[in-house]
Image 1 (cartoon, one colour):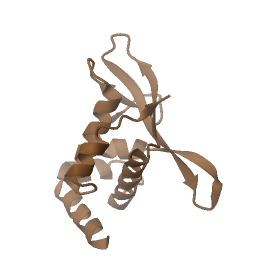
Image 2 (cartoon, one colour):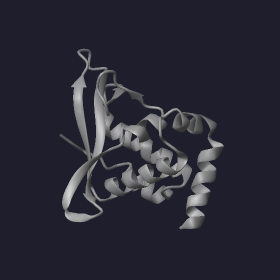
Image 3 (cartoon, one colour):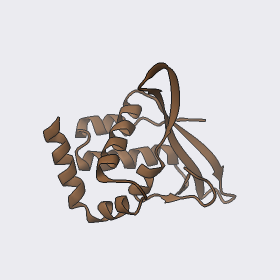
Image 4 (cartoon, one colour):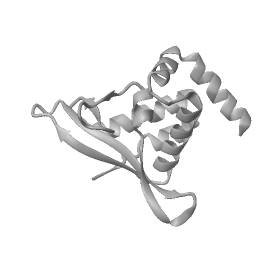
Length: 147
């Protein structure tokens, strides 16, 4: 496991644009990015990933969305919270929506943009070594639930 984390860190550090984006997120680090990415993958794997569509532009060419997952508190198995992946998305280069904390503007039409966003993220995680190609093929096809 330690060896895999070191390999992931090496892959991340070799991507200068990702390192720059991680450093542009206040109070965020490569270690936090790795932790968030692992939590994201685990939530998709366990079908706990949820997205919220805040709004769709009048032209239908973009939408404001956010991704969250239902997580148990470490100290109490009977309490849950919604984990927001806004820092992870900012580090991956997504543009945060104005006046809407935690939401990101996703442009595009003619396809399921929630599916496309998750698909793109899973393939990024595969490139960095978080998941294998086989698991990427499976998890990239899982569209998070929309509320």
